[in-house]
Structures are given as C-alpha cells and as structure tokens.
Length: 632
Ligand SMILES: Cc1ncc(COP(=O)(O)O)c(C=O)c1O
Image (cartoon, rainbow, N blue to C red; front, side, top):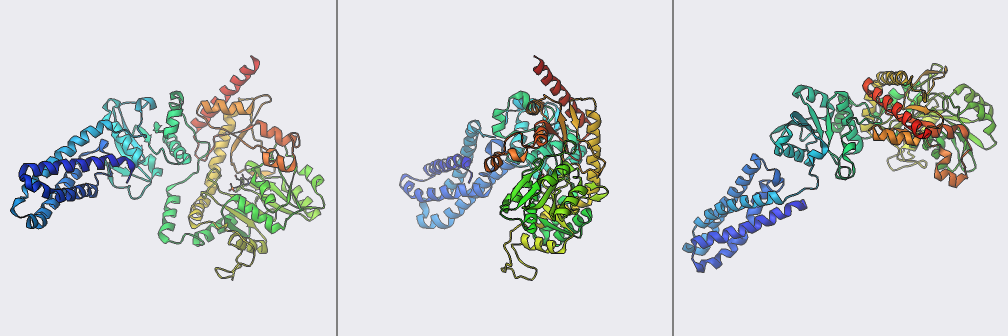
C-alpha cells in the first residue's frame, strides 16, 4: 500500500479502538469489559478491512467526492453488519446474556462520527509533493478546461481547480491513453481517449484550455501533446515535473510558445494497427514484418528488404556482410551521426574519413580515390539530412578498386538520385526509423539489397545466426538478435503507406522555411544540387554567417522557448575518436566548418506556417542581438 495512506489506516485503527471501548462502556457492565477485548481485536481488524475493500484507503481523502463518502459509509456500515453478525452468532453464545448487540450498533455510529472528524483533521494536515501552485503556473481564469492525463496528477489538478473557484476554470473532461479508463467516469467527469483525439475532443466540448497533467510521462510524449495543442490551436498549460517546477523561473514557465524540435506524424490508423497486433497475440516474426519489408523494398526499388531493430544494427550487419575485419579500412564521412563510423569499429576495422562537399554536406567524391589504399574494403556513403550523395563517381571508383559500397540512407528514405531511389544503388543500404525521422516505427530500421545471398545472410544474422532450415536452437553462424517486433512493423506499414504524403508535407514545410528565411542573410538553408531529383527532408538546417556563434544562437533561441540542435559534431572530433586515432581539429576543415556553423531548426511533417514564422522571427532577432553583442 502506498506509504502516504498509512497514517489514514493507523488513524482508523485508533478510532475503531476508541469507539469499541466507548460502546462497551456504554452498554455492558464492568465485569464484561474484559470480555470486550477479543471483540475489540476483531473490530480493529475487520473495520479497516471493510474500509479497504470499500476502496476508501485507495483514494486521496483530501480530494474525496460524494462517491468516496458513499464508499466510506458503505465500509463503516458493512463493517458494523459484520460485527453484528459476529456478535450475534459467535460472541453472544459464548458470553451469554451479559453481551447485547446494542453496543455494536452504537460502536458503528460512534466510529462513523470519529472517522469523519478524523478526516476533517487530516484534510488540513495532508500535503502531496505533486501539488501545483496554480498562481505560479499562470493559469487564466473563466474558461472550460480539458485535463490530459487521468492519473494521480490529473485527478489532483481536477480537484485543485474545483477547490480554487477563484480560478474561474471548470474541468469538462479528462483525456487519456489508458484503454481501461477511456469511456469511464472519473470524479464525475467523462474520460475520453486516446490523446491523439485531442483535436476532436477540444472541438466537440468547446474547450478553452488544455491542462497537460502527466508529469511522469516521457518528455517526448508531453512534447507531442503540446505540439497537438499548437496545431489545433488551443492554449495549454503543462503541469511541470516537480523538479522543473521548482527549478524553472516563472518567466520561462509562462512562455506562450513551446515548439517541439521534431514530432512523429502518428494518426489513429497506426494506433489501431498496434492494437490489432496486440489482439492477434503474434508479436514477433509475423505478417506485419513481411508486409513492412515488401513496402520498403518498393520504396527503394530493391529486390529485398530486411527489417531490423535500428539503423546502427543495420549498418553493423552491412559491415559483417562486406567481410571487413581487423586491418581493413572503410572510407566514410566525418560529418554524420556517429553510428556511420562506429559500425566499422564494431568489426575492428579502421574508419578512414574524407572531407565533405560544403554545398551538399555529403562526402566529397573528388577526395575519394586519394583515400583508397590496399587495405580499403568498403565505402560507407551517408546521404546526410536526406540529400543523396553524388553516387555515379562513387560507384565508378568503387568498381575500379573492387570496393563494396554501403549506403547509409538512415536519414534519406524516399530520396531520389538522378531519378533513382537511394538505398540499393550500392551493394546494400540502410533506412532508420527513430521518431525524429521522416517516418517512424518507434525504434527500427531496414536493410535493402538486390543481392540474394546478402539478403539471406542479413535474415540469418538478425535472427541469432539461424539458417532458414535451422531449428529454434540451431545456429549456423555467429548472429544477433536484431529482429524488429510486429508492433514496430505494424506502425511502419501504415507510415509507409503514408510516406509520399508525409514527404510532400515535409517538402512544403521546407519551402515555407526557405521563404521565411530569405530575408535573413546570415542563415542560409541547405542547397539542393541538380542530381537530387527528390529531397527527403530529415531535419531543416541553416548555416550561420561567419562569426555568429552557433552555441550562442542555440542558447538565445532556447530562452525564447524555441529548441534548436547542433547538427553534427564531426565524428573525428568526438572524444573517443580523438583518443583512439589521435585526430586534432583541422583534419577535415569543411566538416569542422559545417559542424561549427550549422544549426537545425524545429521541423516536422505537420508544422504550421505561423510556427515557422515565429521560429524565423526569433532567429532573426537572435542573430541581430549577437551582432550587437559583437559590436559592443
Ligand atoms: C546517418 C545515420 N546513420 C545511422 C543512424 C543510426 O540509426 P539508429 O538511431 O536507428 O540506430 C542515424 C540515426 O539518426 C543516422 O542519422
């Protein structure tokens, strides 16, 4: 039982003792008083038990409603009935005429009165850590509220709002994702759900304000709901986690704009598909994974697609299939996510970096051939931010030197190079589906290849090294558990069906950004090159003008409630790579210049024009402020 209920239980035990003694003193003679002791013990056990069964202890007394009181009365009355029965059928035959049931009834009433008095005192004394100081959160008055979260924090928020009438806010309903709560009543109010239906509920109930009361939920979940509120749009307040609440100064807590950095585009369809998988009880290696792989193969126009757990594991399998090992070299880009190079280290080979093209930010094919040595086994090209690498010269060099080309297309699903989709231009390619990507499966990734043997090997490696006809506990080679679950695949199937629509929307958002940024000289968007026949926007980055401190931009944007990220810190300058390979700044000037001046702005599929406008205005102000600081 939750520790905070213990005072309630102990208090009730005490009250019960007192009331039973009272009753006994009232109605039985002194000699019989000693006989009351076992009865008292029974009452001490039975009464709290009755109350516990009635659910009284499971609730917060401070916020008791009429139904709580009904439960309380029921518990006490029920306990009295039980005592009466025990007294009539057990105690009376034992004790004879000295015992009358009257004391038990009297005890019941006295107990009830004392429990209520006890509650009255308790009410003043109780204090919960999660209590919200509504004045501090700046809640506006006179409005109809919807509470997101039908858990402890949501109920507390509801009761706090009801108790503080001066707020002028009335709670109309709760919204939650928990199927056991949806459709029920809580504190007399309906619980709707899932949270993805926020827009419908706000509209149908005429909600003026949303109170997000899920302080223990992951940050991303809260951000998603906040983003939905922006989209509707409806004003919202987020009940902060206790730590944030104490640490955040009121100015920041009152910020009217909280944009998410990224947000997966999840509709009711994805949720329904996940529910269907759960209902099917087939959670791994099932029809969804097969369908997911078929759709991925279509996107990449590849013969085979293999679903795995994440982009890092997909790249790892590519390294194994390429046969790289200790002493081998693999050429890649220093301007990427660290997994692009880590996968080489997993197989104890050596990553060899070449500098990037400052326009596309991709590995520069003109520098490729000079980096090839006798030990070079493979090239990992990375289609950074969704813009394809210039593949023709890469493939030509690879052919000349008999090298395997792996495409790290983790950021580029659906991107087109000279009319061909990326992924299977080289020997194999990887797509990743973390929630900030163009499409998501939660966690997850897929490999694509046109090579039958490689596809077979990938399937075996991801499944603990089992061959097709191996039994469950037979393993033909060293393998891994890199299998994607059916739940992830189910989300992926819906997302893939929506991929074209989502990429189109992302294109629109990127175009809107480009227009809004056109009058900010010192923030240049990424340039498209003619070989990019289809851009697949992963993040939206801008390159800051010379002398503008990227880190200062990030800090100042944050104070305006707008998150931004430094994309990327070059891999060769990560402390681990510096320690292991002795890299120093200056090794790859273009990658380092990009790393120091590029910043990613909030970007997602459903971003609204007004939000883009707010971001760009803020960026403009921040850059002017930094220029002023520099001139001082
Ligand atoms: C270029 C690139 N490669 C590999 C990965 C690794 O993918 P995951 O995070 O799914 O392991 C990422 C992830 O963001 C990436 O951007």
